[in-house]
Image (cartoon, rainbow, N blue to C red):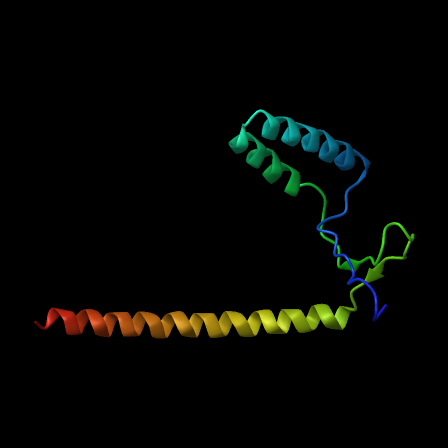
Length: 111
């Protein structure tokens, strides 16, 4: 798989009922776009994106009947670690930004 097209990450998996609803919404979106009802099309896309559930998997090709490849649990755990680290860094960044803004505000008020 190293020299092939990168794997596809499906945004969600759908059951049969959700799949039918997805297709109906797709037709309504297309009709709305053709009629110039862009806000309605956007609302329908939002509704469509809520369908299904996320699954930690990849697939290389639909046309080749490739098997599904699930993410290794360690990869998910590693991602969670990186996410927590980023939350700490971002919180610290905003904390320092607020302190700097406060110092600037005090400096501006002296004159």
